[in-house]
Image 1 (tube, rainbow, N blue to C red):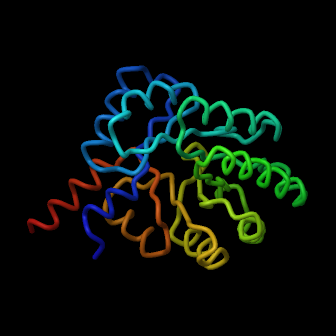
Image 2 (image 1 turned 90 degrees about the vertical axis):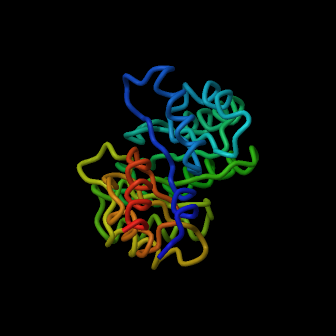
Image 3 (image 1 turned 180 degrees about the vertical axis):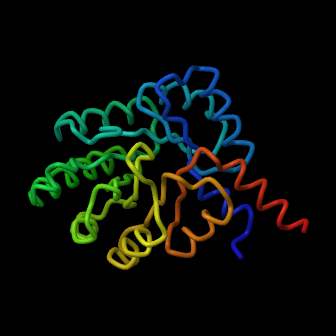
Length: 226
């Protein structure tokens, strides 16, 4: 079984609500530091604020780009990445243009991914590509993952948590099968307990996007005691 510290350090502690306030972001950062989570996952506006809250911490600040629909231009997404970097982001999670993928415009998906991954590399930060798997066929998921193997973002990610469904073990396993060791996999959306988290890890996930990280860690601690 995976160790407690390692599991906690896979968690991207999430606060992406429209009504989130400074108090909530401060609590998010304090919790992430206390529990040893890898990153706080937030929208781009509070990046500078959270960077300040975490200035003495190893916790990364992650900005959501083109979130949650992916329906902004490549140029807009690149600007968001650059602005997030300027404000102190260590990582970005961007949503692909799902409609373009559904149209079969793989060249657009490749161009978009390349532009955003390059902007991230220039800023020396990690990049994650959100597929929003609930809207995709297996063939479309495979297509994005094959493009990712070529472009090499740091992660492919299942979901925003705002779609009709979140991560599934089957999708994580499929994505891992396609990308292999070339790109890592992040599972996000609907991961609310220890059992689900461990199943995602077993299927190949190396990051877990969740707002239930504390609950998952506390469940783990209780399981050790038992």
